[in-house]
Length: 212
Image (cartoon, rainbow, N blue to C red; front, top):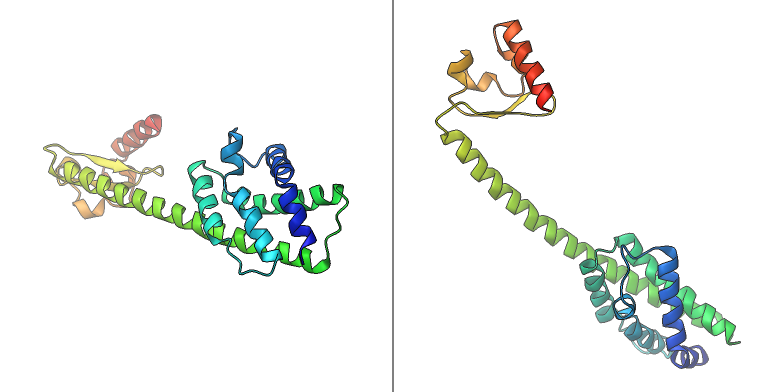
């Protein structure tokens, strides 16, 4: 193999310009991006595709990981990130075909396999960034909830939280004396189910609905 690789190198700028135009036309970017950021490491990827076409070891991993990092920071959707590799493959074939170059079946197979592997590496790296961010956010949420619970439990007055179904989810020890019902009997029940006075319970329910 070789002719396709030579043509990719010779028409690198045209391929990247076609890729950029197609990404924008398909709306894969979440917001307008400058050209250098949009094509980011696909310039390196084209050279690595050429190496694969020449029979060298696939070395797309570094550029694929970096591409995932750039797309994560730009807040691309992971589906759009994966589709970009298909768009690049289409741009390569379109540009070289327009130039009168006919790729062999082996060259097309190598091109597809190389881009598919790069897309898989990029998607895994993107997912890693996403999972790490979710983990940080979850720990921050847990810390915030712990502070909230501590404040509520130590407050000198009765405080209770209701969910959207108006069921008690969290309350402190000062609530029980107010309605004469043990603390543990409030959880997952509505004020109407807890309070002995049906009228009073319905009033609390009505006011809670109004707040929601």
